[in-house]
Amino acid sequence: MAWRKMSTSALEGKTFQFSYSIIAIVPMPPLCARAAGRAGVIKALDNGSWQLQQATRRGEVLVAGVLRRGCAMSATGRVRRWTSARTISRVTDARRLHQPTISRQASVMDSPSQTYEAVVVGSGPAGITVVGNLLEQKLSPILWVDKSFSGGRINYAYREVPSNTKVGLFVDFATALAPFRRIVSSTPSRSRWDEPNESDGVAVSGKADKLQDLRSLEQGKGCDLSHAADMCLILTEGLRRTPGVVAQPGQVEGAVLDESTQQWSVTLRDSAKSSGQSSTISAKRMVLCTGSSPNNSPLPVDIPGLYTLDLDCALSPTLLATVLSPIDSLTVAVIGASHSAILVLRNLYNLASTSKPNLRVKWFTRHPLRYAEFMDGWILRDNTGLKGEAATWAKQNLEPETMPDSDVAKYVKMIQYPSGTEKDVFEREMQGVEYYVQAIGYSRDPIPSLKTSSGRSIEPKYDHSSGGFTYDSKSETKVPGLFGAGIAFPEKVTDPHGNVEYAVGFFKFMRYIKKVVPEWI
Image (spheres, rainbow, N blue to C red):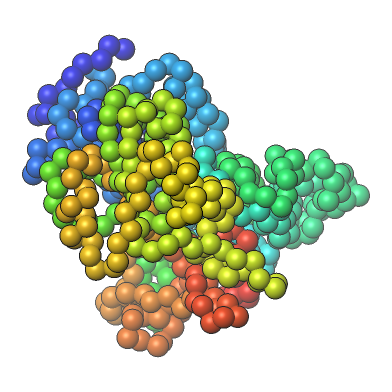
């Protein structure tokens, strides 16, 4: 297929179907976009730039990047990779292997009048955890709704990211529930509620299960999240095939609570239908596992020629290298001192010290680095401190006593400033910076619209101890049958020193959901 430059009028408002799970479009400035067979729309901005917007798994719009006039598009309007054959082999082929196969199974369209015991919204680690725990409680039928059932952000964006979690905890997660053990053991059960029967085949604790990829790694250390993502795909496919689970490709558009029956009328849009057919089902419970996305709030300054580099792109060494490859000399700013910020700094340094010697980095942080500390039976800053590879690299290269003598100092300049001075500091230090990455945490993704049968809007406030919600921030009344889990709705924990954190991680989700699900039934 020959390339051609499409005019700005030809670009605006056009819809393009992405071919692969990750797309690297490399105009100037670079744009990284992710997709999994979903459509993206190019729109004009007031400043003369262009924006590629992509519909994500839950239907909201994700701004994937910004580009100027002259984006490379194929003559048919299908987005193609504008990169070398070697990069295509390294990126495209690898990502193709990690897209789940969606086979035809039971659908809400087959029995729209059925009342479900629960509707679970989202199929990332939290959704997987909730479905498994509901099955553990012998609750069925369960309607599981997601656009792609692709393992969530950990699979489509973070496969190259090193984990904070020890490998052994991923194995513990995958074997924490009888439904999970049936899936990973490859051992038959005589009943859908029973444990895998060891007399029927290989023992559950044997080496012939589906977790050999994880079991072959050092259990006390972290690993690339690709291993955890593959585990998620195994569990997802197994749960989708479990009797009592109806996995519905689509999205929940809204739900109405009948206050007299305390049941939910849930409106679904079926993505498997070309017409986007909607249907309404009844459910006794609804669990929101809708996830979070990186914060990307506007900077307090307006500097011409300064563009955002997507955090998810910057966390992928392969994609980052692809996106930045056409530009000989540039400066990238990294804002934050989180685990993600350190990994982005490491990715940029690795590029600068190898293939892009003219790359420079400005690192903006408001406070010294903070590390997780192993105490007597517990971990200080367990959820907020640096761990694993990020902590090791930071101690070796970014601390005041190590950075001056580190090779990192040739390429990275640290700019530490007190809170409240961002505007002045950014106005001065962002001059000459082409791109900035914000690694300053995550915000909840949108949830479906919720209201009561009397027309009262529900603006739910999450209870981080029970997994339930109140009607709004001023109410203390629990919303019947509405629950949440995962990175968007984690457990609030207090350590022995009185520090309050939110517990985020695979096994932390499992431990929390196992504790609260019996109260949901």
